[in-house]
Length: 622
Ligand SMILES: *[C@@H]1O[C@H](CO)[C@@H](O)[C@H](O)[C@H]1NC(C)=O
Ligand SMILES: *[C@@H]1O[C@H](CO)[C@@H](O)[C@H](O)[C@H]1NC(C)=O
Ligand SMILES: *[C@@H]1O[C@H](CO)[C@@H](O)[C@H](O)[C@H]1NC(C)=O
Ligand SMILES: *[C@@H]1O[C@H](CO)[C@@H](O)[C@H](O)[C@H]1NC(C)=O
Ligand SMILES: *[C@@H]1O[C@H](CO)[C@@H](O)[C@H](O)[C@H]1NC(C)=O
Ligand SMILES: *[C@@H]1O[C@H](CO)[C@@H](O)[C@H](O)[C@H]1NC(C)=O
Image: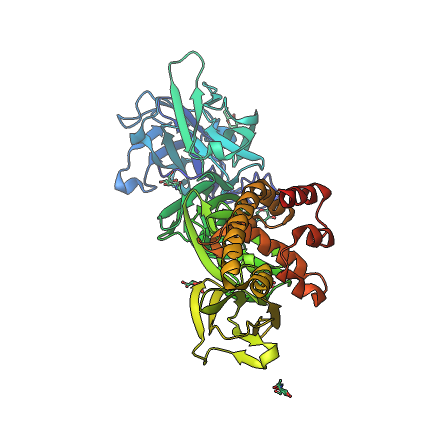
């Protein structure tokens, strides 16, 4: 459609004697009307003062000002004739005598669109075709004007331009499809430009992103006719980005492939960015941006922000990506060597998502555990040799399990177990000394009265048995005339030295002296029998007591101590050992007392409860 509203306006100047007169005509450069309606082309003209015509005639030509070209005559007043296409459609509205050449054309159709020239005939040679002319546009639809930019949220005005140049028919203008527009108002006004009139209907509203791409219409009707003309405009509403879709927070596992999508609606297209903790990961000018994580690791765990911006605004939305993974191999203390009595702190450190259950295990017993933590501390306020061993730290969540081990080596000075003793047989004196220590001790037997020390290098000395940290040694002396009065077992390592007199079957020795070898053997046999009974009874009696001992120990490891002490050991020994251990914390002066297995005396010193004491007393009575 060639019709242009913003055509240069011509000044429509009515000059009434202000200037000396000359040939001139005034008419709108452009005049528009709807097809099948009519148009009045307003026109006035003037001629030099000196011409005083008796009659004034006029001719309207179509498309050419020159009669020689035989342009179609729109209307010739002198003969009241017209070219056949104009016959019956045209009339002179203006009074030519009054220099008013206004022309009306009815039943417009597109063929009539073009330039209209006026020629006046004042008689004789005074004929003049004015170069000023009107361009007639025959319209099928009104022109809807929208502002250069429609921005969401700022008031916008659309106008519908309806030429109103037909004196017989007045247009009526309505807007179509405006129901959804926010705060819309419509008002109309008439505007004149060089005597051409335009009915302007304004539609004001607050556009939103929803109106982008919406088609609005302007409808022109003419009362009492069926005529209807519609013009449309499709709105291009600019708006700030809106994130219309983004993955919700997601849980995944390590090693998976994850794509998170951010879909943005904006006009114009936005710059979309994916951030993780202020680090820009990806950006693009697009409608959506997908962040692809090819191989998810725990490092990908976090909050992801999709931000979008264009010249009309910015927005962002975030989503969380939780990466689940099995706990890492726990890091634990390197193997630890501790002195007995020291406090030891063991740290087990790992990482998993969700936070794992961590346990420290020794000998299949859980010593300590935490739930949903990444760290576990095991504190042993005062280590004893029972704490010695291999520890495992295991960490577990629903995605897996891992563990690490470390060794706690408890070093301690030697002690001689009470099973150590000397026995006298027919031909020999045999002394057994069982020593527990870590590291291993150097064990020797000493016979003070003979100034004799028998050690590893001597033939009498045999290393008989090794069981964990326990070493049993045997010294065998060929019987001589005199049986040694006193045999000491000494053991020493880096951490201490112990000299223990071995119980020497004292009664045996006395009887030996008094009643001779045969009697001694008899007494010995009786003693062995009685001793066996004694030991057996104690064993039974002490069973429950041993558990009460155990309870006094703080560490849960105690119950596993049996294993360490070895299979051959009986409960009685284990208890004795405990007594010994207990003793060890007492001043060392009492060491030699052990030679005499007199529990009723010993126990009082050791602070046993009276109940326990009673039991021991009873045993002794039996
Ligand atoms: C010319 O004539 C038309 C039609 O009668 C009229 O509407 C218009 O006002 C006239 N123009 C002038 C300048 O008098
Ligand atoms: C995110 O959404 C897209 C499309 O909706 C989907 O294909 C993708 O798997 C989702 N990603 C995650 C991690 O859920
Ligand atoms: C997200 O928007 C908030 C305000 O709505 C702003 O403070 C923040 O800086 C934005 N974040 C990013 C990554 O653009
Ligand atoms: C074990 O490691 C932790 C942390 O490194 C430390 O504090 C602790 O003292 C260590 N324990 C031992 C027995 O070395
Ligand atoms: C702990 O000791 C055992 C044997 O005593 C050994 O097999 C294991 O490798 C040790 N572990 C560490 C962590 O040193
Ligand atoms: C024992 O040996 C020490 C020196 O080692 C010596 O002084 C002492 O006289 C010796 N005693 C006997 C009885 O031989």
